[in-house]
View 1 (tube, rainbow, N blue to C red):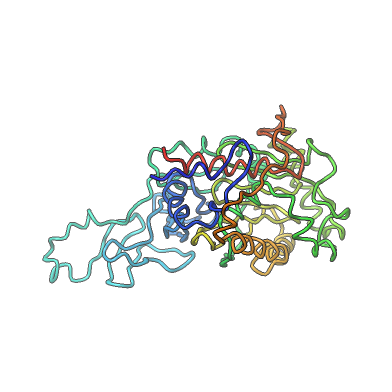
View 2 (view 1 turned 135 degrees about the vertical axis):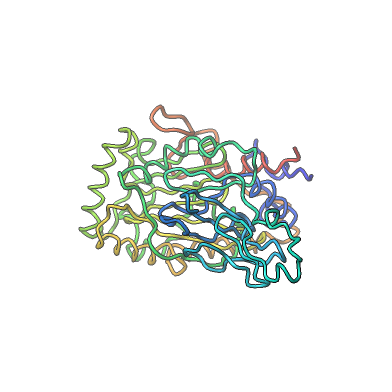
Length: 421
């Protein structure tokens, strides 16, 4: 097993370009990161009834997420046991059984092989169907409706894996009694760039906003003062480096054009509800912009009344596929849902103006550092190193934006998993 730990220098806070462009590194990530970490798959609001299913990916593995008749969530590889063909090609649906389009093997939503064409004539009833059910992912757990799965039977629990990140996730997913629900539809698109560039940006990169999103500021779709930094550093406006490679950005901005009245009133109601459910330190942060990543590739962002959750699926060292959903509080009235839907499409979607800026940078980065000579010179992650501090009211190592403390935490975790042990 190759030891890749030398590609991250913990003392100098540097990362080798090979982490992003090397094919061999990428192949090992599939086993050591995507084969060991908890990976986000779906929200329980997408699977309200027995028979409901969604298809997703765990790294490069296509998976089928099902709610069985008993109400249990189970996850299977979306691959027939006969010739390996992809079983289900729909994003979402409801089904009691799934039939392979290649040779017709049929499985129920508990993964059991229940139908084999020519079972009597060609198999002479000698095929033991109990041995040929769908391959099941062994670990499936949820937090606040967020469903995660893990291939590693010996992995720590999801609760332990999330650790202090749960405190920050509660700012979004536990602020109201009804919680969050997924809005209809899935945005799915392909991008140039390595999956880690997207994950790290949502983990703690507030530094890029002034340059990459300068055009947004010019048209007024940004803070009134032109800064995505907030005005209460350490208290309300900060970034947090958390255990296991997770990270969080928190800041408050006043939009140049304000927000629509229905949305403003809704946000006030949500803050009042949060004060009844969360700690005082948490409720002070509700209504801010929240951006975060659960390592390795699940990211969230709240902005202008909507929540986008997304997964950065690896598709080779130079490409990724993005799955993105919009979410809203279950209590939100229809006019607020419509505002949130439109704002997400405008800003963070395949056609979103912020999203297009980011995608251009990620693809440009891997192209520029793929040359054999450029790979010899490391990338700098030193911003704020050694200047973070703990806070008795907030978990993690915190520092006001801009800093790269949380971002480098991604590569500390990456190094731990990609070493030779």
